[in-house]
Image (tube, rainbow, N blue to C red; front, side):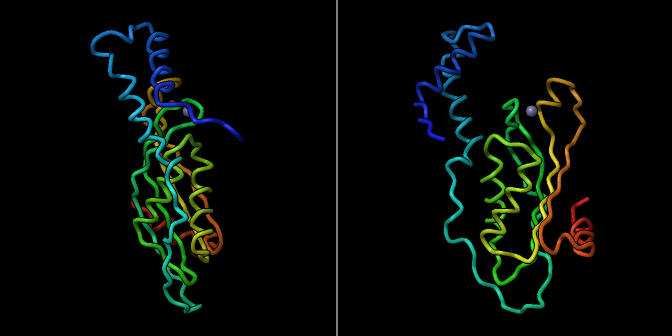
Length: 190
Ligand SMILES: [Zn+2]
């Protein structure tokens, strides 16, 4: 899909339009810098579109074919944006894998989460995309991704169910087997 990225000025103008649409005056003293601040925060929120993960991030580990221990990074802060309402999805992610011959630095696991989360997203797709990227990078014997998050489109608007937490899980490879699946679930922070 071909699309030209709007300029920063165009993005700020769009924010002024929304302010007017809400019923306020974008020229009002304390709103004057708001478009700039909104665009700045959007750059952060959507940082995933400008991130790369194809840098050299894997390092070899061991070739012991019988190695089937689980490596897991738990409780990774998750900040995403729902693609239907452009409102925050805030929660935590847990990513686990069973190495084949390569392992990842743990900060890279968190980076893979951000790479996919800091975009317009659906939680159901997010767990799959994180798992697929991990598989592409180090071809592990299994990958499991669990996310639980609150969707602001549900907590602060719409049905206003402020305590509702959405949970989603995706497993590939060895984690489809009951033993590993159960082990992963046991390892999830209570
Ligand atoms: Zn939504």
